[in-house]
Length: 466
Image (cartoon, rainbow, N blue to C red; front, side, top):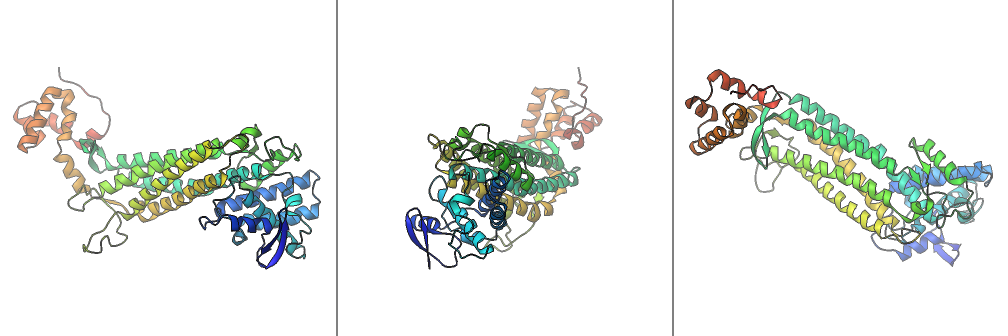
């Protein structure tokens, strides 16, 4: 152990640790979950510290040599090379001060190493005076939240959605000619093609991509430059704008300094908006996964219209049983995401006066949602959607024997006659077409044209009988 000092005095710190006394106090104070802050957040925080050092150099507030050492150390944080030196629990001081100081100490001590100075010497960079120059936990933690979440959205969730959309669109084209019966209220309705049905899923996912873009846009304003309460005390008035410019260049995303720093630090409404968009995507995935489970149910005593890839044995007691495990795991992930959204909402509305003091739990839940959603969609795409096949003959047979096709006869024989025929078919077990012909309501040629399943899956001009 080595001895380090902070404003509260001396603290014993493990020799190999790059963090210092403030971080060690937090480790001892918050033995709550055993979970450190999400790595995506730590990497985003590294980028923010890098940008701050560069901005301070550009503004003439840090010498080039010192700023370069801080940037090099911060870059290692951003690249995930120093994750092991961030032990502070997620459940910590609500402003995230412990994690901000953790970053300041790690970067300062790594800068010491790079300069050939001993860890803990605070030479050539001091964690507060240099690494944290022009900053406060109160503006840096929400800035890192926005940066890390926006990056996870753009680089993780969005590509996963795009790949899922492409896979569903390919299946929609593959299944375009397969006629099946539609269902509303889980009851037989009118025919459609399996391709049309799957195209609806693809459109849901395409809207999910749009929702990701909206979430990224909601996070573009950064709190940096507001320091303690939003007034920007001890900060160059140009600082926030310069940092936002540097972060934009580093990430390829468009960031700007907050229009109102008091809002940017006191409220987490933007995080609530982003979490809500993610929850909406989760709801879409649940609908798609549930439909796949229903359409693949059976294989002989269910709907049986889809054949899902067999991924593992489905039962420890029933031989040959294969379950829809991939859609099931997607559902479980979606339920977790929706729960996380509620946590974010509660934590955001609980902010008071000039600060939201629940930043870490907001950060943890949003980033967990995106991490598990991204992985779940990758698994759904590769282990389920791409391998789905259709039971085309069974789909066609269900259409042929369905009473729902009577709807197509409404314009030609009237609602009353259609209802009567439907009831008679249901009671007798006979087919709709057979009964219509028996009563002479339509000729065989007319009936064949109207009840051709392909004609019932698209809009067409109707010439009604007088």
